Image (cartoon, rainbow, N blue to C red; front, side):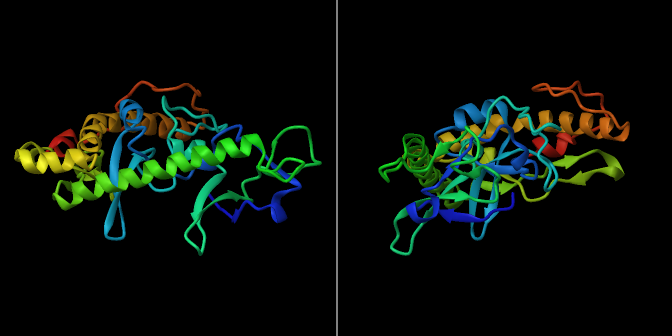
Length: 268
């Protein structure tokens, strides 16, 4: 996603409006996106969850593809093929950013194609009303973004607790088998054996930090990697045959063209 993020201000946006995305083409190059504690229950049932490194820390993410810059859940026409849509994607083209005085500001991606002059067309939501106040739909988006930001902060606390307890380990996931096997780099998971070996006191510390729910959600979701593997195999086969993959939600049948090394995948 290319971006030109600007804070929403009266001076810049009083004569503009914004549109809701009609498809998910904007996310076609995102092979993972952040997930928060508020949505892990829904996300874990539909998507594989993992951790990725961000500097010295980790971030909980939904894995949407097995290779960089390829989102397997965005169809040829931008249709979302998954059973759950992460809040991070539902917030597009908006983001929250901190100002120089440490206040949160609603920002919008002006290169998204979703910011228009108010006089152009009948569709869209104004940023501001005629009196100069924040328009209702924009206010609702601001509330959604604020809630999302609070959930992101709480999730970061939980993930940090898992990290400090040494419960996050590399996820040795491989595509294919034998000499043709390729590693999926950069993903981390919960060390289930280490989690199960914890005494009551460290478990209580994790629970208070909101970390246990994140850990169990990640472990439960791990099997959904197979779903992505099947989609990838079906798409690659269709592309090789110069065919269009049918746009239906999970899942094309696994024809065996892509195999996951489950012995490595399940090894603790």
